[in-house]
Image (cartoon, rainbow, N blue to C red):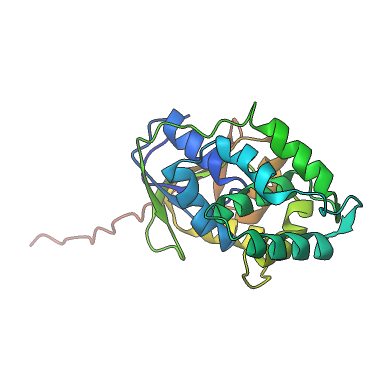
Length: 242
């Protein structure tokens, strides 16, 4: 895998995966499109470092005898946690919203259980590693303005994950906006240099990305490489020697 900078990550349901990949590959600078508004803050939280002890602190702060035991529809689940975070007014509320967001992306069903969230917070700390090699600078973009040699898509948003984006936004007190994953991929491909490559890491994502970018790419080993335009031949006028 030949990663030539500048590098763009246009799609990523999990910002931490992007951070870990950049550190593991010793990248110097990366551009990211956060996809949804909360991720502008989440990228910053991950980059500054998330203390795993906050997972257990979340259990202490968020749960008590009044926590609903029954399954809740997504509207009720988000409303409950939105009000609860206002009530506790913790300095760690941004981290707690990050944790709940991650939980919802993993458990993207319409009905949710507060008990399942509590159990997840209690156990995930044993396997959730927040550390990564911070060797790169991070640019969070609102729109694309420069060309790229490499586009990396670690994984696509599933249909179920995209369906809960409005509620994730509401949890963060933001407008319930969707985004077009296919549109973002297509736009990103237009900012790829000729000869530049698009990498996907999951086999089930490759064909979806290929159909999003359209024609004009060579395919080899699940890598899409943008074809170069044929060079125009210089026309040489005939010269009549006297």
